[in-house]
Image (cartoon, rainbow, N blue to C red; front, side, top):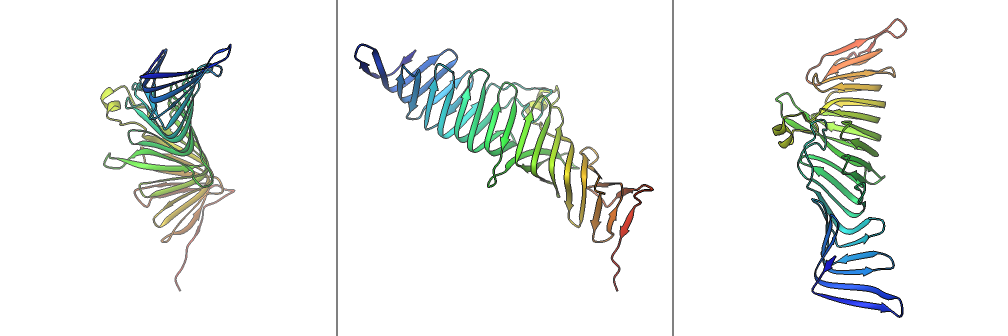
Amino acid sequence: MSTSENVDATFQPGKGIESLVQQGNFEYTDGEQRAWSGKATYVPDQRLLTLSQSPRVAVGASVTTAKGMRLYRDTGEGVAEGDVKSTYNDMKPEPQGSLLASGSPIHVTAQSMKATRMPTIAVYSGNARLWQDAKVVQAPVIRFDRDHRSVVAEGSKRQPVSTVLVQLDKAGRAVPVTVTSDRLTYTDSERRAHFEGNVVAKGAGVATSAAAMDVFLEPAGSDQRTIAQSNTGKIDHIIASGSVVVSQPGRRAAGDRLVYTASEDKFVMTGGPPSIFDAEHGKITGVSLTFFRGDDRVVIEGSQALPTVTQTRVAR
């Protein structure tokens, strides 16, 4: 059903209505989908509704605005173009989730969007940005599945995927950790953010680069106040692989595999063989290297086949 201030109907001889143009406070209802705009054009043969003049479409509690929209009634698909913004208001707290577990609205902006109604999946293109509270994903293309709270983000040569996570410092304060990559895959029920291709993670005085990185997040928990306060998306541990490099002021470690544990602020590097260099102690290699962010402790383990080797510069 649609209503408006006026309707212009064009007819085909012997075939009925060719098109309908409705203008002035247009309002449309189709099941749980509703739409509003200043002007709408409907073509019955194509089952296509085109909205212009500040269109707005709502499906349940989720709302999308854009410069122009097309709704395909046969397939349930929708296309939005120009300054697209979607707000998913019907999010409930998910105790077993993490990055998108808050009950706060999820917002997405982009230049264009294509969506399906069943299941509710939307692909945002053109400087797409998705965020909930302080957690942000930005990329050329973002595919968002509302029902499963999953995100697939694709980067480009000019614009990598940028993801902002949360880590606690020694004082228990939440500090941002920014991860850039070629691709991100995340599903909230798994609490694992998989990054691949030119991965770089920066936060709290440490930068880590690798070919691939899995960031495992803490569950939001059952405390509804904690979830409501957006205390979600915190890093539990990280596993990085492929040409891993960890850089701190005055210290650099390299290897094939890294395991980072947030609760201990501990880095364990293996493969390569791993090595660590600092200006004071020189370069050390071994079977595995364990070091901590907050102090100068380094634990090096060797083996009979690969003993620990230390190379130290001596001033003449």
